[in-house]
Length: 488
Ligand code: 5AD
Ligand code: SF4
Image (cartoon, rainbow, N blue to C red):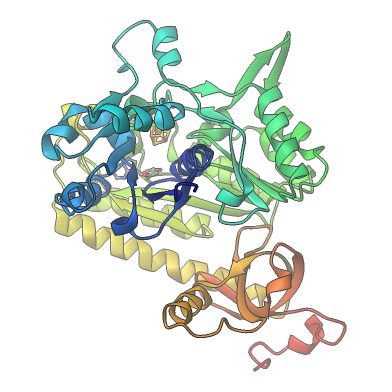
């Protein structure tokens, strides 16, 4: 009789890099016979893939760990592990705060997870594998201690088999003064183009239509291989040749490295999504200098205007930090001005969270009261929402090409509920969601067969974050929807 498969529960917080890391860890544990479960109580192994960018993300994990205090008594032999940035940052402190944790693995050691779990199962001893700190040796030795984890992919492990993240860079050397990433993810290292192209080719062969290239400063990627000097735009050009791929995106871009050749590649290569995520972080020169971002507001504006001039339809999104050290009302108003001028598609806004070990924490007071941070966050978000909604209106009555990702969030909740209640699964009619070439979310009624297809959808409703539409057929064309909202 074969033993029942072991069950794995994994919780992921943080950025796309963490989502990809979790996908790869799950794939490697699947090879060991694990099956995923959505219920921690059923799991033989419980893993957290963690983030350290803000205090809040860490607090969430520590309280989730707190809830597992009795998890070992409930299921002897159960393995609890903490992976990712918080594992690298806090290291043994995690064992001190939660002694029942068995495993601590930094982002540079994820390839070791299956072996480490096997070891724990054999002797019950705790294991910790992390990279060297940024001052713990020669650059090359430190680099080697941060290994990119990119084993063969498993399409069944992704939210959809036709979309995939592809890592092209690990680490970061920019050292923005507020940011913990350079210390936990290590020195910037680019992945060789031969590997990236091979992975993209393999993904396309498996039916993947869209890839998103990942890096902390993805457009700073460059590489020398076999005497050839590659720029990021060269990599984009070669990836564009991969048969089967329909869409190529990349995040996150660094403003200063948004050079003409990169913008030209996005403009001229049809598979390149007309979507750029280029965080400005602040609209005040004083703040940008304290943040050590390496550009002025005028330089950011120039880059932004160039992109818009060359590609009027490009969607640009940004991140902002409010309440960084010394931010005055006047500084904040300059950030509001920048958002008004640039009219980003959307902005991710964060309250400054002091990170021990950064220059910001060591040398600059965290002197903006939390209430002020919160107010500024709300004010900026409100402004951005008004802009996002206004700029979605021109889509009314137009047809957009949508890569259909799957059931909408509302539909997914409905399906889950009816499954829990033991109802028969709904018929083929579903509310679906997908994205346009400029990364706008579109919701429409369709059927399961359309998932994975690229379809023309005519938009009849537009709010700040979503466009609503109907699939265009011979009978439903844009002319029918010339009058916005007349579709219902
Ligand atoms: N506090 C708040 N936000 C931060 N970010 C990075 N570090 C911090 C911090 N200490 C934000 C930046 C970055 C995004 C991923 O997170 O805006 O672009
Ligand atoms: Fe952090 Fe700056 Fe690097 Fe982005 S560029 S990961 S904000 S240090």
